[in-house]
Image (cartoon, rainbow, N blue to C red; front, side):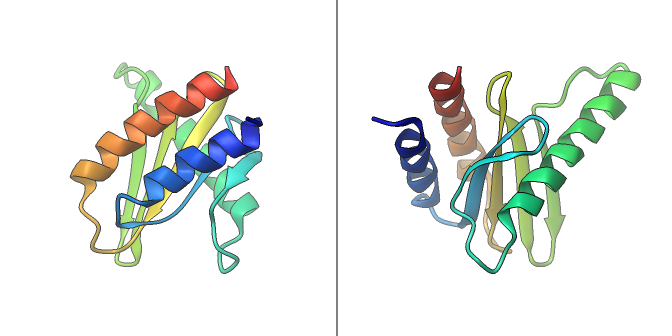
Length: 121
């Protein structure tokens, strides 16, 4: 199975849990690798900005002596954005619906990021 097919399967499985509008895999420097982002969102911009957010959080927490963050979660009235590492090469980006609960989503995001790490490493 091709890499893109394996990534597509992981992201589609993630989306099936409910509450997730879109997801993507990006390189650590913000280049889009694969996405289920609809046309109303610009996937390349989503990937670049999410990588920037995680990079800024890593800088801040490292400077404060708090280690490297596992994830960044941004909440607004329109939904949540979750950015987490997926190995040394990639990031997993998830956009949720406004009323989505994070419990199950965070568990599934962690599982998906491990699968993505295995696919890309």
